[in-house]
Length: 79
Image (cartoon, rainbow, N blue to C red; front, side, top):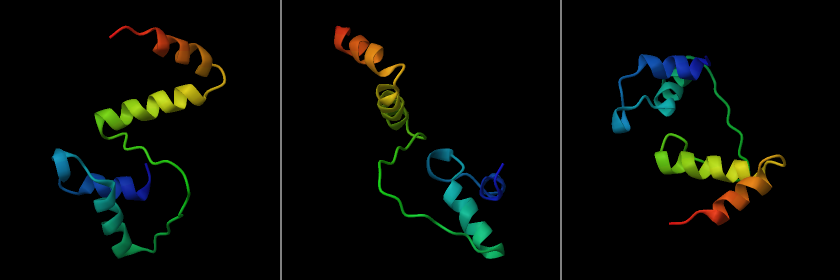
């Protein structure tokens, strides 16, 4: 467990009744410096059901061992 997740566990629940990592980071910032890294790329909200599904599909399609078969599975779906 990171210090931030430990701090988040000490917080009251936030949005949607969930523990928020950002609340833990805010508490941690009161005790020590924290650093961030700005990156270019996609962000996935895996705390959201649809975001989790999108991330899972995207990563599966990028995998060398799963991408082809999974892509064919998706093409064959009937809905």
